[in-house]
Image (cartoon, rainbow, N blue to C red; front, side, top):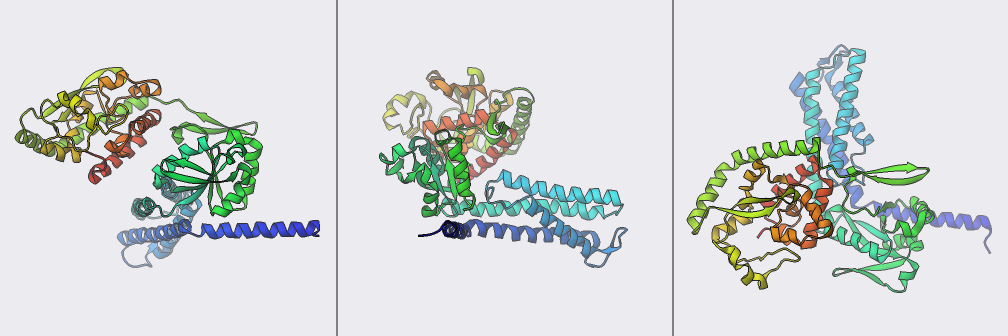
Length: 500
């Protein structure tokens, strides 16, 4: 029979072995990608600093710099070391933000500004007179190269994740009902880098479920809430996602976090707030209790004015740049089939105000009158009407639709103020009449030429997915979101994804 000290040593040995196994699991794609990123950052920094040195001082490494009379190679080495160290201090290769995009890029920019801000302050305080031309070249060149490096490595990572590689295995702790939406969301978005390998459900549900079914996928139930630690070890997971915090309770949540602490396993908690972006959420500790504060969406004031100004300037610029393409489209439409060049359709805009939306005509004249005859071929769900091989589409119409060129005249709508460059999908009057519940919130902002629906599948989306994406945009719109959507729109159009 073991004594208390023997049991303690045995428990410690088991815990140490478990930590070792978890640490070995972590030496996978994440560490390889992180190491690759750190080395790439170091090489890029050295290249930028050496390039600035050569441009400013020539190829000789012994040219004295400023009042210190230190040779330029020493100054370059010091700047490179400080820059690389600052990148590590700012954790630009943190595993939690790898591949996230904006969060990763913002840390790179923050680190660069920090190191050169410190250099500027030291130069001012000690009157070192470090060559400003050298700094003026190294800083922007290095920052741009760092951002480009992170972008290229992110593209590589996203390509791997599309093939279900470089994924973090996740065990979901929560009821079957609360686990399904998270599993479905992660399955739909492999770029997030999470793959659910198991679920720990409530004691009552363990006898009812062997698997949690989401679409065509069945995720195994690995045990009860209290067996999460064992489930993590058996499934070789590196992340635990809690979706039923209110069911677990504060004590169980705290104990679970303690159990995962030594295993190097991340713990994520679903706050139960759907489709609310990070900038609107703030965790505020009150008497030791973390409370989630959710700001109201902002549809008015300076933000709205800025959006209007960007819309006007962007639409005018796009019209000038796209003028040759629009002329070519107009000529092609006119020569291809009988009828007008433009198609003017009634749509409903902000605050339920109707307007005429302009498009290049891509269908035969009188196509709207054939809707009833083609209803049996409708592939859309809910209030959507769509047919992959619509017989009403003309030959030129197929081409301009494939590349979304038929939507270029909507830039005139943006200039006129009835539409925005980015916004929800412009709905039909009959569609709006059937809106119920939260769907009516789509009408709080102007409809857009592009939007989350456009960059997330376009015609391939179901009605429910289209509505969810539109509401997500309405609840969280910002200048950064608009810029991201415009960039993704260009990629989607070039890739011709989901357009027909």
